[in-house]
Amino acid sequence: MSLRDLPSVERLLQTEAGERLQADFGHESSVRALRQVLESARRAIRDGSPAPGGDKVLSEARQALDRQLAPSLQPVINATGVILHTNLGRAILSRAARQAVDTAAAHYTTLEYDLDRGERGRRDVHAESLLRDLTGAEAALVVNNNAAAVLLAVSALAARRRVVVSRSQLIEIGGGFRIPEVLKQSGAKLVEVGTTNRTHRQDFESALQEGAGLILRAHPSNFKIIGFTQQPSLTDLVELGERFSVAVLDDLGSGALLDTAAYGLGHEPTVQESVQAGASLVAFSGDKLLGGPQAGLLVGRKELVDRLRRHPLARAVRADKLCLAALAATLGHYLKGEAAREIPVWRMIAAGEDELRRRAETCARRLGAEARPARSTVGGGSLPEETLPSWCVALPGPSPDARAAGLRRQRPPVIGRVEGDAVWLDLRTVLPEQDDLLVQCVESARAAAAQKDDALA
Image (cartoon, rainbow, N blue to C red):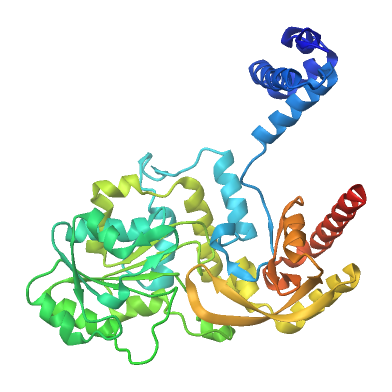
């Protein structure tokens, strides 16, 4: 066999399979894929391999195009037990939020159009009144994430001025986002006060006597400092801010609107508490404990929110129509008192141990596996060291890492965790309606592994 035995691209395109390829992927993409497959075949022939037939070339071209065009962002079953798993997309949207996104995506909308006046309006209005009602704040602004919210606030209120913050709150969250670097980007001058474990009201007071543009409190939501510790309260900082005419920005991060202590967890500071304590501005995330889309939310004094709204950076970090649609629907659940029932994050947090055990035992019985008690976490940089009792389907075996890899190859992929001799599938983060699909994926992974073992035997 020689290079002359390879079919030409033109001849392949004229076959029935070639015509189907073009119908599915377009002429140019088909030509490009066929050329790549043929080039690989030429190299293989030079190394002594036989020339592939036309059917094989067309089949490999189709497989290559399938791989290329397959979406890399795909749904998975989260069986890790981490509710707000950052790597898996954090919060799942509620049914109402998903429907709102679908409607906004399929139609022209009143994103920046005032129907009453028949002229241009503001996109902020779609969530602002809801946030005011929920938090008690005078005004609100939505941007694309909480890092942007903090950057915008510091840039608008303290550019080229001093920002006073406790040394213990110079935090880093996922992806290398660091408070000091945000302050640097804003043009503000960072003023650290106190020590790693103890900062006193007097430390802030001394720094403010030299002048400042902003007091920043950053809630350490993803770690704890315990032992010999001290921090001034938010009320202390607000009193100092009023005395020295300096605004107080409270970066809460996780954005809890419900009391986590009511669900067996430690108390996470709520947005309402910060507003009631008198913080000038409160910044928090939309896709953590709020349970909505990725967004950065700012609530507080109208005068300051208006300044942020007018800042040039506000346009660069503004939220789009899909985010605003999902956010408004999510906030609506809180106003109607149905958040724990309708928002998946809170449904998972509120899930009872007895129900999780029943589901785990049912799945385990179908799979010939074991149901084991476990502990779940909230994740997403929220409530460090806090856990919830849960139940898992445990899949013991000699190669748990290989079994976990096999589960990740399913459609949809199943993401569990390896502990000891088993893969653990935590039912707290598996939606109840996914139980049958979870069982099917485990059975499919087992069949694939058995087939591979037979082939190697």
